[in-house]
Every structure is written in structure tokens, then in C-alpha cells.
Image (cartoon, rainbow, N blue to C red):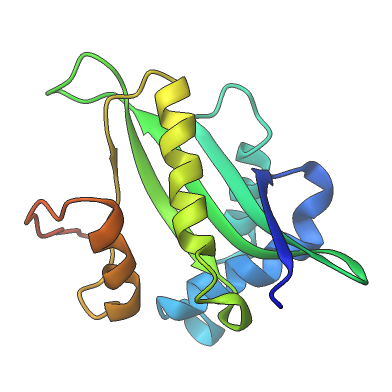
Amino acid sequence: MPPLISIRPIQPTDFAAWKPLWDGYNAFYGREGATALPDDITQSTWLRFFNPSEPVHAIVAAAQTPQGEQLVGLVHYLFHRSTTRLHDVCYLQDLFTAPAHRGQRIGAQLIEAVYAAAKLANSSRVYWTTQTTNTSGRALYDKLAKHAGFIVYSREL
């Protein structure tokens, strides 16, 4: 029987449990070893979650085990203005579930938690991007949102 999962805002005491999930997320996108994010980016990201003047937020999925609570998923999101809307929009930037806990609807619960937070903040839209090769993620996303057909371009500066 899978453990009971709770979805909750991240807490300042969660760093040690959050960091392996963050590292796993970054490794999935090729940011590990020589290409890993510098530690100052991780530290700044962490601090932003708890700074009320920052638009960056985090929610975690916690499994209740006989040994206590274990973080098994994360989602990070931020609010920003849009030139096509009166209200802020919400960008779901990072979503990750620990491999051993996939298939338990944790990703879906985290996305739904972002939808709820965005609605509470009077945001008019939630959107995110993923790689075209993320077939398992896209199978979930196709159930929870509409693919708008956009292709993302970026350039490092």
C-alpha cells in the first residue's frame, strides 16, 4: 500500500529533504556534474521561497512513513504580469516527483495545488513548458491542461 501523501507549502526546515529532489529535477534536464547549477543559484532559489517580496513559491508532496515524513515531490511556480491579461499569470517552472513514487498521482496533485494557489491569487492562467522528449510528463500534462502549440526559444546571455 502506497504511503499517505500530503501536499503542503514548503517550510524553512525542509531544505535537507528538498535539495535531493531539486538535484533530481536538475539532473533530469542535464544539469548535473560539470553542468550542475552553481550553489549560489540553489541558495538564492531557496531563499526566494520565504521572501514575501518575491513572486516565487514552492509546494511539496510529503509521504507519511513509519520513519516520519519524507518529501517525494516538489513544484515551484511564480506570478508575473502579462501584456494580454489584466491579472497576473502563473508560470509553473519546476515539477518533480521522486522516481520511486511516480505513478501515484503526486505530479497531478502538485499541479492541482498550483491551480488552487493561482486561483487564490486571482491569476488568470497557469502555464508551463517541458521538453518534447518528456513523454511520461506530457502524458500527464495532456490530461490536466491544453497544449497551446507554442515552441519555446531561448538564448543564454
